[in-house]
Structures are given as structure tokens and as C-alpha cells.
Length: 220
Image (cartoon, rainbow, N blue to C red; front, side):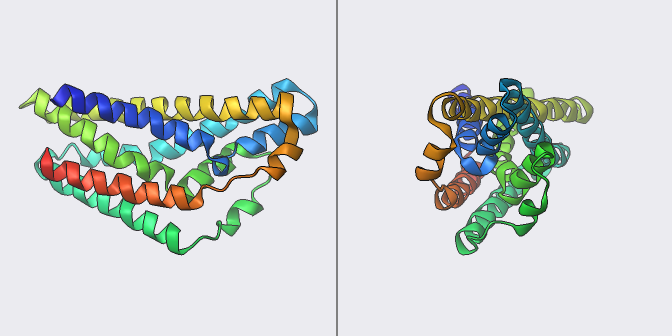
């Protein structure tokens, strides 16, 4: 049962990355724009790389503090519930406040890494991973029994890095596929006509993930 649950959580890490990659708000249209403006395929790849780097740093900035706190496994359940509540509240806030953060517009387009980091933080992208990550850590804690705190902390730090890397890789592949299709075949004109906005879906997904995190803390 726990193996099945753990596999489901790791798939959730991957699918959340794909979901972030598809969402235009995570920046892949900027990569297309950079490639078309410079007229170089390499510019598209560099832009995607910078977006991935910024996103990865944002994920680590959120997950690493939680990995340190989760070493206090005595309060494992409380931490998971608290993280779930934070994610739900973030989703509710985004449902109420539909406006995009103005400071993102002030970041120079050339600084894609910084833009990606700020966008991920502003939209709560890292928070979405926290309940999933803590669920994985909860399963690991059950498996390791009375493991020393130092080794438990090291394992959870490495898990945080692996979760962030797996998520970012999935996001980059999904966003890269869309960016490549637009760049080589459809063009920005098509994108401007078919622009899709996932803000409401994004906010609702935060509420759902946070709710599942709270449920998982009570049931496992």
C-alpha cells in the first residue's frame, strides 16, 4: 500500500511539472519570443534553460526549509497539515485576486532566470510541491524507523533536491515542446490568437493539492 502511495506521489511530482510547463504563465512564450527576435534556435534553448534554472531555484527555496523542519518528525503530522493549509490559502488568495503581480513586468526580458524565479514564487508554484514532498518524506520516515536524525535530515534534503529536479525537468520538457511547436511551425501570431489563461485552474489546483495534503496527513 505504501509503495503504491509513494509511486503516486512521485507521479504527482512529474505531472505537476508538466502542468507548470504547459501553463504560459511559467514563461515558455518568452522563450519563443527570444528565439524569434534573435533569429537563432540557440536563443530559444538558452531562454528555456534560464527559465528552468529560475524555476528550479524557486522550488529549492521553498522545499529546502521544509526539509529541515520535517527532520523534526515528532511533529510530522502538524507540519503536513500546516503546509496543506498554506497551499489552500494561497489558492483562495489567487482566486480572489486575479491580477498578475506588477513587479514581474518591471523585470527586464533578458533576465529570464530572475523572471522565472519571481513568477514561480508569486504564483505559489513551489508551494504546490510541498504537500507532495512532505507525503514522500512521511512514507520514508515510516520505512526508516528509528533512523538517526542526521541521516534522516540528509535523506530529506536529498529528497527535496530530487523532487525539485524531477519537477523542473518535467516542466522544461512540457514547456519546451510547446515552445518548439510555436517557434518552428505556428509562430507568435497563432499564439496571440489562441492564448489560453489557466489562472483559475491554477488557483483551484492549489486548493485541491493542499486539501489532499491535509487529508493525507490525517490518513497516513
